[in-house]
Length: 197
Image (cartoon, rainbow, N blue to C red):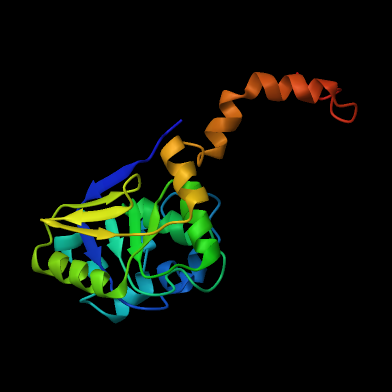
């Protein structure tokens, strides 16, 4: 199992409130058969309308830690939104708060989503804008975000934190690792025993 205790990388400052899933990945891209290729369309409409959008800025192109504001990921429950961010290269999101379903989808993809105080987010965002190569660490074990000589406290529901640090977030891996037990159990169920291999 893939245990996720911390994520380190450079940041992408997008310190705005109420960024909904349609802005993260516009609806016209939801007709895909797989999630492959979604990353290149992350924030596509916002990027077209605002050439200075951080996702258009080469200084942040390799950033893996997104910093945002309140209610990030609100709107529809589409899994495509965290999938698009992950496939763009985002490995963790730090925000003031998250929409509940977006948060759950992030956790199930192994993308930590942690909450910080607004004033700490403003300082972190400014530090990244000042130095796009600034190394930022999201420490799930310690519930901190560290950069430079700063460490800010963050929060995350214990269930999600425990799933990430123990590797239990990866449901597909759990199923594959327990394939023999699943087949054995299926073989005892009258309504599926004729299908068990």
